[in-house]
Image (tube, rainbow, N blue to C red; front, side):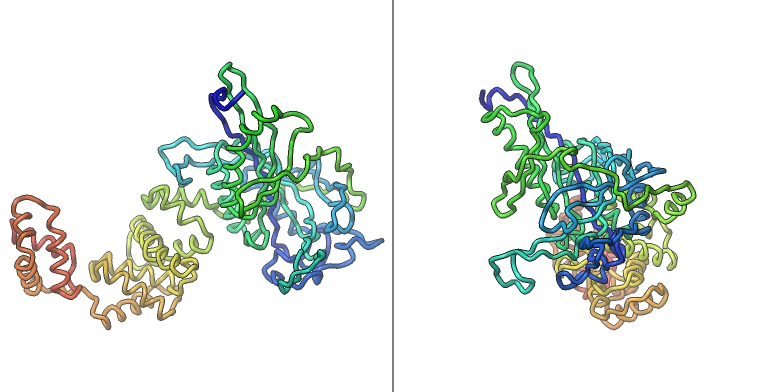
Length: 524
C-alpha cells in the first residue's frame, strides 16, 4: 500500500478550548485569580490559600460569578443551560495538581447542546459570502478548576536544574468548550478560535491574552482516507495539547493532515478504542510528537464531589444572565453589512477586536450627530478606521483605539471630507495631527472645531474660488499637454494626471472632484 492507493484525504477536526475566566477570585476559593487583570503580574505562589493547596479540612465554595460567566458564554454559543448541574472529582496525579484531583464536571455540565454558524471562507480564511458556510455543534461547556504550572527556569529567567511548582493558577476558573468534529479545514478552526476569543472579550469574561494562557486550544484531528478500491479508512484521532496561538493551531492541523496518511501507510492503525494519542507541538521545528496514549474517561475515576452540592439554575436566573449578553461580534458584522453597505471582509475586520469595534461605533455615532445620514456615517467611519487607522496601528504595533486620536475626531475628519472642505491628502495629514495632539474626547462638535482649526492652521481647507480653479486648470493643461490631448481624444484615464497637476498647482487646496469637472469642461 502506498500514496498512489489513496484517492482522497478528508480532514475531520473537533476542538477543545480552555478559557480562563476573569473572576476576581478563584472558582472554589477566595484566593485572587491570576486571570483577572488586577493580578496578572503576581509573584509565584502568592495567589494561594488553604483550599487551593488542599490542606486538610479546607472546603470549596462555588463562585457565583464563574457560573454566570460560563452561562453567558454558553448562551453566546447557542447552548442550553442546565437546570441542574453538579461537580465531580477527576482523579489523576501531576506535580502542579496539589490535591491529587481536579474538580470538574462529568455528566451534567452547566452548558450543553449548542451550535454556531461560520461564514464561508476564502483561501486566506477571510469571510466570503459567495462560499458555503458551516455549522459547528457545541457538545458542552463545563466549568472546572485549572491546575498550577511548572516553571523550568527561575522567575528572573535564570537557568535552574530543577522545576518550580507555581500554584497561582491552581483553582482558577476554567471553562472547557468542546465542539463536535464538524471542522473540515484548519482555516475554519482558526476562524472559530478567533471568533470565540472575541466573544469572550465582548462578554467581559476573559481578557483573552494568549501569551498569559487565558485561552488554550486542543484540536482533535483525524483523516478519512478514500482508497482506490472504495474503502474509507479513518486514521486514529490525535489530540494536540495546549496550543496558545492561532498560528500554532493552524500549523499543527496542517501538519497532522499531511502526516496521518503517511503514518497509516507505515503502521495500519485505524480509529478505535484505545487508539487515540496525545501529542505535543514543537513550534520551532513545526512537528508534533507523542506524549502519551490518550486516557478514557473511566481512567480518571470520576465521582461526584462530596463537598459541593448540585446547583439548580432556574429560569429567572437564566433570564437575568441573558440580559447581560450584549450584541455579539458576528451579529454586529451582519448589521454593519446590512445597515452600512459594508463588505463581508470589512465588517469582519471591524469586529475582530472588541475595543476597536467600540471605537468604530462611537465614531459612527459622532458622525451621525454632526449631521451625516447614519447609513453614510457607518461607511465613512469604516473607511477611516480600516484604512488610515489600521495602517498607523500596524506601524506602531497597537490597536486603532490606542493610537491617541478620539473617535469623535475621526468623525470630524470624515465630516469635513464629506462636505468637500478637505481633500484625501488632507485626511491623512489631519489624522496624524490629531494623533499627535492626543486631545480625544467624545464631544462631536468640539472635535469638529479642533479638526477644522488644525486644517486652517496647516492650509488644508479647500479653496472655493472659481477664478483660482480656472488658473490651476490652465497651468495643469500646459504642464500635461500630452494628457490633455489624450482626454480630448476620449482617453478618460488620462484625466488623473491632470487632476494631480491641479492639486500640485493649488498646493493641495483644490477639491479633486471639482477639479475633474472643471478640466472636463475645458477639454470638451
